[in-house]
Amino acid sequence: MEDLWPDPTTGLVRLFALVAWVTGLVLALRMVRRGAVARRRWREMRRAALPGVATVVSLRETVHLEDSETGQQWKTSTPTLRYQTAAGQVVTVEGPALSGPGFLVGATVPIRYHPDKPSLVDITLPDTPVDDGRGALVGGAWAAAFAIALLVAVPVAIVAWGR
Image: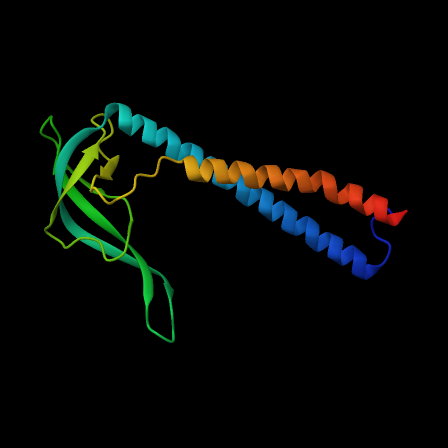
């Protein structure tokens, strides 16, 4: 134990490194999970989704960041969409969040919806990217691998430097 905690300063630095490592690993694993969920959803929508047209009935804007000097805001817009399925069911659902100002209330937008789960909706504008989950899945896997490599490398370095 003396090798790992030789004095209070070194011990606190090592404790901080451990907390940072655990936090990084947890965030990396959450990213992998989010990517896997998005990937499953993307595959299911690609396999079964039907095209349709929805009307924007309301819009919720969320400001994520605001520059106090310039007043510039970074926000997302989440539209509430109403559409009719091929079976004739009228569905009102909150659509996916989009960066920027979003749509006007009353506008019609092209969508793809899942016939068995009508609450699963994607807006299919040509310039709207579809989240297929690969970015989060691969990024999270790399971050987790890095965190696990640190788990092995840091204790080895501590023991080696302590000699």
